[in-house]
Picture 1 (cartoon, rainbow, N blue to C red):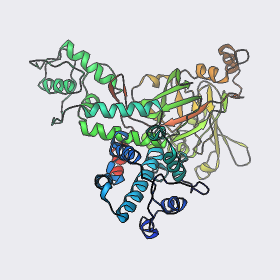
Picture 2: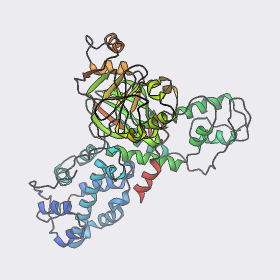
Picture 3: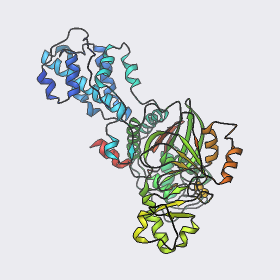
Length: 502
């Protein structure tokens, strides 16, 4: 969110030059115009040191996943090179262009280059507040300009790890590997003509130690390397080389760089402050993490929405736990799943423990059910172990009607690809998480929770402490100097990179 400066007055450092308002008008930027209005239309960047610090930051903006060309760096460097001999007209041009580029850089650092609210219907993220003119004014007044600019950058550990990942991958040499293709699967001790090329790829990505000679045998050293590679990419570490492993091996260095850059962009969209205590879910990693005072207290596997019913991206706050929840069938699932199942067999309603209510609240028996009235009925699944929400539901306010919940298909947590739900997030071992969130060892320990569940009566319990909630999406990072990638399950990365660079 940009806000115009109103009462701050900039006192330019050193001897300043008058700026013609027609020059300012040519930029067609009201924020920039108002900034110079506060200086009484005078230049402000007389300090050689401050100009050079800003130019260095703009020149190295690619380290933040940004594009230096967006900030007219080439033209600014030309001005700086001749700064001692510039006439008053060009000094004014240089000053205004430097301010304009700095404000754009600040905006991109704090909110990203693109606006997710215009890109995605199911991304509900608030714009990070920034007053550009006030920020530039404070930078001008500061004796520690470098530190102040650093403070504008996202500070979350994932963002910092993404920057490390970008630096790390850029140290890899160029290569022109051809796409790998295999038929069937390759297992340890197999001999296969593709193995030499696979070994070369594993050596390139530093999962396998280089050797003088490579054999077409899937030997013990290669087993260790494949396991490392699969773990870094979130694949099943079964050391079987199959389509998923080959697909990850076929990513080029450039494609991985692009992937890191789009994730740096996303992290500029996300909240700068996550909260003292928060739950964060990375959708492509199928993982929930509970963080307090920057320490990870617990993690849980999760199941997220499939491609046709994507889990939304949002920030909220956990407010309530529901034990033995009922489940009201939402419109999409009703239309695509439930009605077709009823048409096949009316017994579906009975076997699924779903009760149907008409507009007057009267129960409609399976054999009274009419297709013509199907969408006007309410469909409610009663509580119990068979319930689609399982035994517990955790609520956070959001406009998508999604929540965290247990599941009656706990075997799904053993799957590698857990993009399986209709949008809500299913949590593994939810009772342990619930006990922690309720933070009441006397009334809501695991024993009391179990007793409540056995009653099979719906009960609502407020979460009293402040636990913020972030449902986010990132497909790359680094850990202990290792590049980590996840499958882009919603196919967002390539499209976002193209939009960033076009």
